[in-house]
Length: 208
Image (cartoon, rainbow, N blue to C red; front, side, top):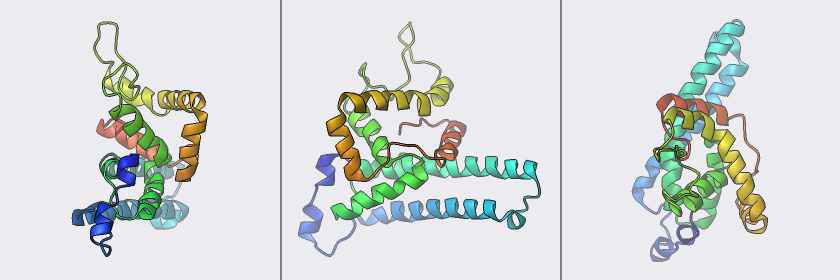
């Protein structure tokens, strides 16, 4: 989340017993738990093919593809809505809980939540529609945006990896220290592919 929001202490000072910044934030927490439970169930079923009715390679492929689409769909909501809101306005009044809940979002997001937050808050919101806002589709020669489907399949993880590498190498001291504070790894995760395919299936941009 942005530093200003991360350090926002007012609710905790006014009401020390209060855990959530807003009572309705329970909705985000419950949905996130359900999302992680769905991932756990999918992996458990994959490891127990007889229970899932997987009898051979084709049924295994069908199970993986169907799971990737469904998990990607709910991950798009969990990250694009829930973590998006959390990065702007923390869910908890405790900085410790906010930090660790953000880290746990890595599991359903498929890649470190620190990098998602960096792309969305530090790059996209700070440079909205500017030439250096590389989270948006590219401009064509006539000034319009590129085809959206092309953007979905080329932006993540290919373009975004290149931009992140350039940004962090250019300012290694500040950015990598921030990444270390979040306890995130710069590497991706196999869990990112269900998220990727699900977002492409729904036609949702992978940056938000």
